[in-house]
Length: 109
Image (cartoon, rainbow, N blue to C red; front, top):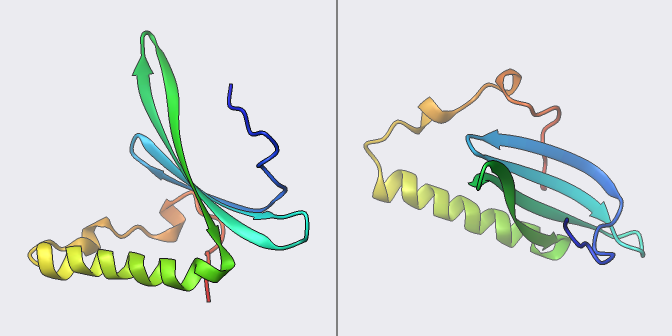
């Protein structure tokens, strides 16, 4: 059982992205002072004995870091696409929104 110790706050918005054995959760939560932050959780299913267990990793992202985070993520993705693997057609991995479990679009502006 996971011990949250009061760290989980009210969820305002949640988005789930399934990716093979991993699932990513993007959750907007509120603080006691009505501020907002984002948690990004990677949940990975693995075998433990005869049962499946879920290994989770979580990142807390605060509003003052949204722009820096998005810029660094985009730079890293662009480096892989254009510098390390320019021969790969990454459009083959693009998924139509109707094919995913996404209900709404996340907008960080």
